[in-house]
Length: 126
Image 1 (cartoon, rainbow, N blue to C red):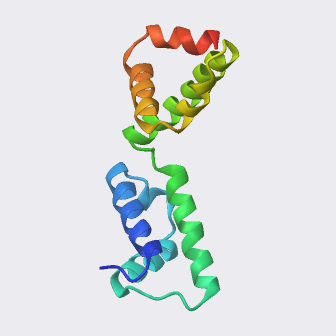
Image 2: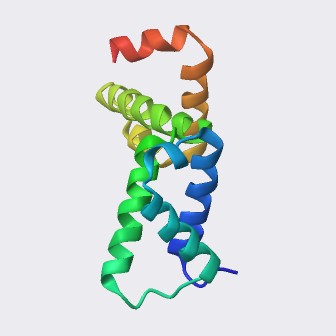
């Protein structure tokens, strides 16, 4: 078990970056060494400077590593749900604003955007 949630996040991002080939391409040898030692030694962050270095490494890896399929579904779904709920609210449906909080509806619309060309028409009109 990890001593810190930052290390758990670092480990998962590292694995994803290695799978996508961005770990060795975008990190310097010093950044990779800091990452490897932090994960292996399960360090506790007593130094603010070390925490900031690891945070920069995490940001760098997230920048160059493609997002997962489910993250893409959520981001597309959130955009579409906002548009659709505002249109429905303008038509008089008061409960439409609560659709933004409904995660299953967000996932449903996100999947529809990725799978159906017809749903792209909705995003163009909204």
